[in-house]
Image (cartoon, rainbow over all chains, first blue to last red; front, side, top):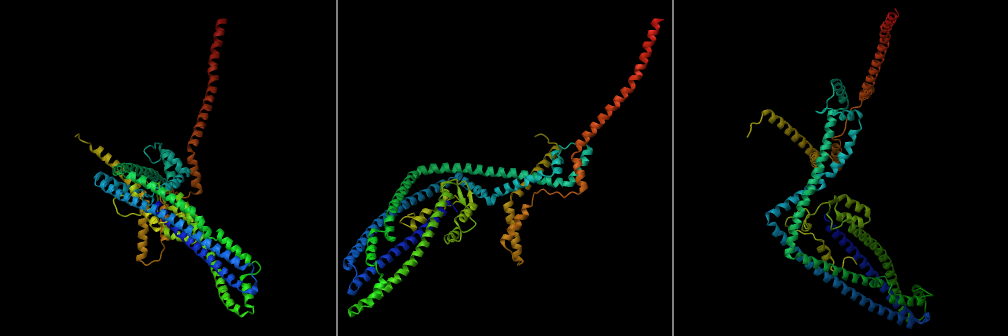
Length: 439
Length: 139
């Protein structure tokens, strides 16, 4: 799995978590507004019951209504501004996608043209083979290096063995007299010298060959990579791909700028979602002043005790409205809990994304050979079953540094030959969210 | 083309064969990941065909441990006498040096003794000779 793919998955995950949070906030805001309207409605009806003598009822009601209307207008305007900003982001993303598609198509053409050259095709094939052989699970380079490093010192411990070895026993350089030879033969039989020396020499030869093969593979990859990169650069230059790449960079800057603008609008909407906007606070204050002595429930109870028959109808309606208000409050509490959970999930998703941005540097020659399904791991992480450290550990274990000879090879990391398969992350995040993916 | 002596040809061939053999052996040691995978696959196949229950982790662990025991230093434990004798043999050059020193010292002592014994015997005729010369001149 390439860092691009990994980042694509985590970005998509963050975006999903963010949308969930925003949906919950929106729902909570609507519920709060409904609650406010319902409270006001109840107070208006209570004001009609003369026996209750509510303080400045009509004037306060008018002020509350005005505050709620002003809130609605301000909210609509903020939504409109955000929608415009998101549209700008979507347009910038679409422009970038078009440009990317053009670049991909040209890139494909470049490679197809290049592969008509037998020398180039042969080197690309050779590079694929060397890269495949260079993978740790095929070459076992580190494994073998560790084995040699661990076992070599054990041959320097036994004094009898070291003595015989220092006299080059068993080689053509061993030139001691008969008496010594006889005594050394006896010593050699005691330490199983022949077999142990053979093992030691095999270890030495293995370590040398392992290093030599690794160096050879690296040199080959470097040499083939340099050749292929050079040819690709030239061909890209001829096709004008670098101009398009610069435009793509500008396009990305435009997207970032549009996203930033959208991000600045977010706090305004968040104030509405969290009921922190001045209009809501004013309406709430007015209602609180009206209810400073008694709660709505107590007022409804008092209203039901009046003797006036005309008030009875109002009281019936009030009781229904009061039940609705209670239900709304319960719903609101549940939603607040849910929103808190979603906020935590979003924080987790963003933490992972930030961590991976550092860990999986997309520009370097990193490849993740993961033993577990990353999407499943991500789901467990989001569910809280797995910690961020454990995810990073899994990635660290699967991390491999492999020289990616050509930028074009990002489309298929294993094979750099011509293919139509692509897993570019721009497509994933871009299509899934035409608004912005990191608000 | 000159005639190549058969002995040279055979000698070189033996050396080349030796190198080839060594190379093959090292290559075999180097193909550790593949060999481990092959052995593990065979074991799994065997268990499956005999309907024996097993877990992949057990097979992997067993194969890994088996290959970990290759190319290690292995010497049988020595008995008390063998240990003593081997220690002595390890210091045999020192013992030889001591023996040499003793021999040289003995030789020197012997030489000194011989010289000491011989010097009065040499001195007696000389004294007699000088004595006779003295008496001759006086006469």
